[in-house]
Length: 108
Image (cartoon, rainbow, N blue to C red):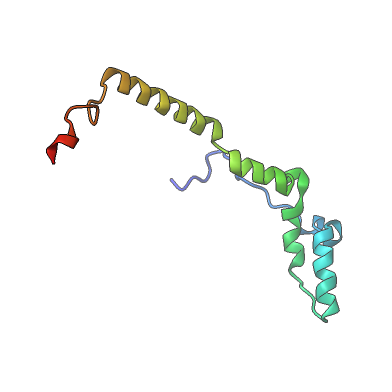
């Protein structure tokens, strides 16, 4: 019942921590140098290296495009269907509201 023992694989694999090196990421090297200039060291900085893996996560620009345009084609299709549906509805059921039903200038 808990999902164990059904022949399924783990949904992820944990990579070996030794493959992540701060020296491979120029941005983190700059952080490391800035900290060292103040006499500080971040022993956990290596844990951020994976975020800069372009092969796995793409560039920052590519991720931004993906987030911004995710679902765009479905949203645009829904927009077009809404416009077409509204136009069709207005054609089938024209509105008489405000089109010369009375003359307001003679009320005074």
